[in-house]
Structure formats: structure tokens, C-alpha cells
Length: 145
Image (cartoon, rainbow, N blue to C red; front, top):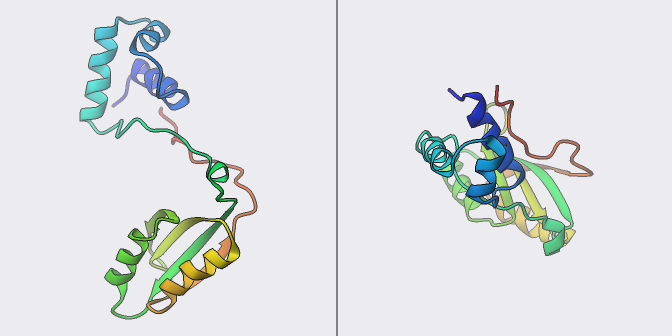
């Protein structure tokens, strides 16, 4: 699906999504129009979904993180899913198999704020929360080859 040049382009963009087209072209040894065409194809194929920035939550005052497993009460699955989507402190969430239906990551400033978030869910779901001590593996791409 990806050739070596596509992989190289993606790796460069992962490290600096704001790199200029000219600099990207220089680094991969192609003309700007050729790199532009490759980027267009990678976007069309949904390999590249967006160009974004990485913000440190701590710099915004969110010094605490938690992983929460959520098991909706009977008949509450869609309501709980909507609640999760509407809670901005839940920065990631996956719908999973097993005993729980959702596994989410929360960013919060105080334990009181965590309690308020969990209280909103507790009327419609059981939760199990773990405070994150550190993240030895940050979010990263799977191998490109």
C-alpha cells in the first residue's frame, strides 16, 4: 500500500506537520509538485486523516489523567455513549468487547473535578477508574512497513 517514499513523507510529517512543502520535497528528494501529489493521494486514501498539533495538557492546567472503564446499566448504552461524547475532559474513548463497553482517557485538574465527571456517569453506568502515574509509551503510529 505504501512505498518507501510515502513512508518517509509520513515519518517526516509525524515529527513536524508544519514543515513547508519545499523543505519536505528537499528531504525526500522530489519536486514540490510530486510531493504535493503524493500528499493528495495519501489524504484521498485516508492514510493521512488530518494535520494537527500536539498540546501538553499540563500546560493547560490538566495535571492529572485517568483511565476509566465504563459499563452502562441495562438499556443505557446509547445514553452513556452520548454522555461520554459530550464530556470534554474525556479526550479519548474506545468502545470495546468484554465486561466493559467503553475505555476512556480523562484529563482533569483536581480530584473534585474527576468526582463530578464520574458522578454524571454513575447514574447510568458503573465505572472503574485508574489514575495514570506515567505514560511510558505515548500515542504513536503502528509500524509503517
